[in-house]
Amino acid sequence: MTIRKGRSRRKSAPASVPDRPHLLAWLKDAENAAAYVEAAIELGDPVGVLQALRNVADARGGIARIAEKTGLNREALYRTLSKRGNPQLKSLTAILEATGLRLSVTPAQRKAA
Picture 1 (cartoon, rainbow, N blue to C red):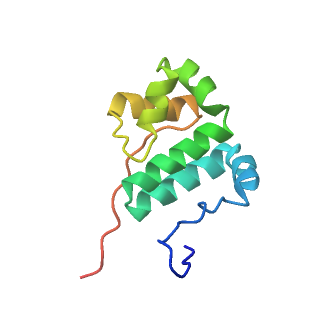
Picture 2: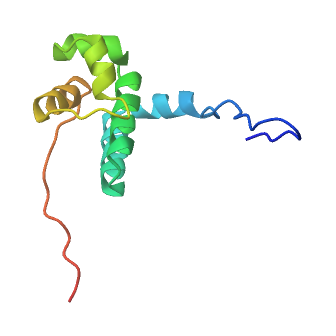
């Protein structure tokens, strides 16, 4: 944020992710994409999980291609993977399948008493 004397505060442009091309190249590998989404889930931030899924979708064909593979319309897919998105299980599994991933459940690790 830039503050100038005598003027109101002005926000600077949001920082871009300089390594985004490298991230997208890395996410083309299914093992990397799965680990990336799993790490986002473990952090417990729903917005972060949606962003991770969006990055995976971008890396593995783009939103238009994923929309075509899932049968969802492109605009709906953008909304689903936005910060305000709230995908239904059916949409989530379709997105994962279209990106070469799948949903699975594992036992939570128990803490020693």
